[in-house]
Image 1: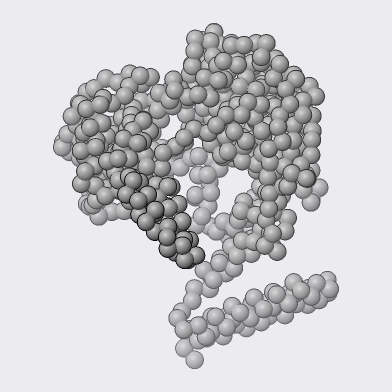
Image 2: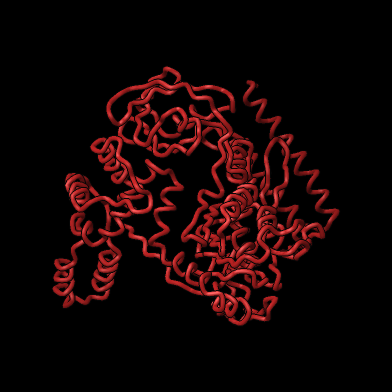
Length: 556
């Protein structure tokens, strides 16, 4: 018997002993169904290991089984193997060891797409558009973004040599010392008027409270703050404890801001603020949208329930579930949903019911089961469907055509060319915009480029034509052909149809090269309709008081 067959037989014998032991345990507990399925699972593994046509990695097989075990629960419960822990740590802390730059692929080389402000890449002089020629002396031609990323990341304090070609054609080799890179949770804090401050909070990673506190202290020191806009739009949440600490800056010490409740006693907790507020009375406006979720909803919903802020925007995502992590041994983790959270009015804003997901039944909370609650001032609010803002607005239109141009790299490529033509250009972050001639140059730049874009109207027309053919409505064929002739969504036509959105996309790329991500945010403030509405409310004390003391919210 060779070594491989011997190993297989030992593995199978171990599996049999394993099944026998667990079958006895489940029989003792009278849990026949679970014992039966455990036996089936291990028998299945034995058959696959011994008889599958190609060799199987048993480690990968069991990892797949572990992942499958939670696949029918909710989307937030997941198995994290050892090799996935680095990504998990980045999601929760926003930190990693590296040079601090986003990269993108273009043809045979990877280029710098965005150096983070103050990062080793930024301090080393790397710019957007730089072509990475070599890393530690190894030719980088043909490297993928993953290969480049793996070589640029490393232990903080270690060094890496990067050879780049700048947009002007010059080449340079720089030695960069890797650092612990922290993606800012608060990418911008500034002023929208002389007295109204604005803070963009993008996620709830570890340490974001300190960032928020520092931003507020800096703005306070400037001495003219009469109102504050907190922007939580598209903030997907994160660490619950960071949300509680942030709420403590705006409400009295000892205020109940959150409670959680699950099956276990450990999951039943009440959370109160533990420190004196920094801004106990300053008028607040919170901006939310359909992508504001989790911890962002805790902050927004609690401030609404406590009548401490006016909420503007669209209904939030509706994630009222709490996740905890449990070690599984061998550096693997289980992230699982352990409780639901409840904001001060007592409502849970979870929008999707996963309680019967194992039977394939997942649905939103129906109107008939939505309950009414009251804020501290007695205003009506509702559960079961996210946070409804006090002032509802239409979401900003986002052009899919402009997004397609950006995703294909055409906007960045044009930005590279624009930068070559305008070396040393000074840019006013607030007011910059490309000229009509620049846009004409962009249209010319795209003439030989294939843009695989299809408008929603054309896709709908295709579906309608197919349905008409299936239904044998032959007399409609001529009408459809006429509509197709009149429907123009070629690249050059779309450049005029979506001119405003495409120009703004190009503007953002160029501003990024001069003012980083903070510059792009600052640039957007002057045309942001929801920010303008927030300023209007904060400049009208009577309306602010009326909304926070008298105005009810809508159900959905």
